[in-house]
Length: 184
Ligand code: 5GP
Image (tube, rainbow, N blue to C red):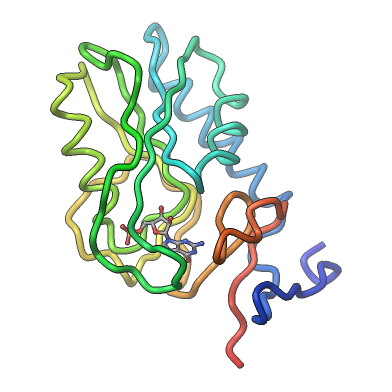
């Protein structure tokens, strides 16, 4: 499957396939089963981080079989570049009342961990019953913030990825596979 997926061009750069849709879906199903077992008898609320996590969140939610709610928060940190600025801003806050709720923060990717740390701190202020963290991807080498990740889809190398919700200057979010920037 992997070998049959051609490289793509986005904004003048070449990206090769890194995780196929099949691999992603299999792992998302496993995460859904893990979350369902951990939250049996409870009613978690998944808080998806826009824009990148929308596709992972949609699939993850379908793989969870306990009753659950959804809401979204939007952060900005990267602008249009491939390098983190390290500055996290909140562009849209959650609408739901999170007090006494079991919150699961759903991210697309954790790089430095600064966004996730900001999210955990921000959501803790609403006095939820519990806060857990889920991310589809974690860049293992890059994590600088000390934030605990409860559910991790894939640990990946420290290269820039696009697809399955993740963008490069707003393009590539619609791709079903995840691609990695090829060195020129
Ligand atoms: P952190 O705060 O952990 O450094 O960065 C988290 C955010 O940076 C993610 O939610 C995502 O928006 C963006 N990001 C980090 N690495 C990548 C990457 O390789 N590709 C894309 N498209 N976005 C990334």
